[in-house]
Length: 438
Image (cartoon, rainbow, N blue to C red):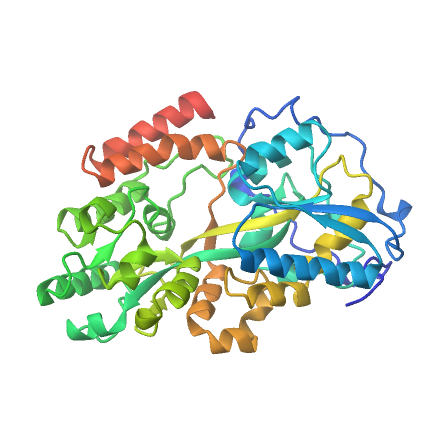
């Protein structure tokens, strides 16, 4: 890795400055005053990024498993050796979002930290994050053109990039190949109609009570909504439009599969989540994220080889789409050395740093050009999910994203559990979001 991370060669100049449409929604998550951003912007030319000898930095994220902790600690140690800096990596064990809000409000936040896309815009809208474009423009080793467009868009707020993607996951169709073959299904379904036909064939074969698993939270609804061309918010982010014709059709498709016992819920199957249902051979299919692969490999190794992943089936009149979940590294205006903080972020997310991270198999590389890595060639299921980064839509609905989901999720659950019909559920959610949130 280059020791002088920032130079005056603009070869890494940002060229994808796009505004996140959903991030234009008015308001924030009550962070005004609490977070207290600094109006003064830092001039990157005032900081010598080539000499970090003796610089003290801090890094935080949420506490996960030992594998992630150990890898990040290893990357931190490499950074310290390369730059002569001292980095204190201390993850936050619980209530991460609230703790970060509190720490920023007190001016005691780490120099670099994780932000999940689901609440990223609530921080960016308050002006408390460092504009990272000023450093990226002078960085020889980090080029946003290397990242998947939807991920860069997710961390661009009001035309400015305040976060560099750390990793991401998409949703794919997990399927037990022998179960499908026993039911006479030779290939994974590619359309909604084929999905229903495949599930009916598995149901008729009788090997499992429910051919497919879905959780009560409505996660499966969102990629189907996007495939139909629907959205949660209008293009300008000022209005909730989830009860559109496209939204109703997407939710009706899911509910009809549930009503026909082609999908089983946790209370019906006895399984808590998709990976457990697949690993226990209790279902033949599930729509799930990359994290399920690691679970199958470690907890259900005897079944793992039977489970493959395909892109989500799409409606006849629809387009390829899936939901994506992503996290970035950001820095706060409170940091005493934003240039050094950026250098740490850049080291963790450039091609080499991202490759080391992705090869742990816990999440996908945010670099689009990593699809030809030997690691992904050797792990085709992850490669399939990586490919979907091109057409994925990040689960990020602007500064009020958390409140929007707090309203929408119970209504989706009501439709999935049969308490409300799809149109009523979506109309109620849409009306409440427009009246009380936006």
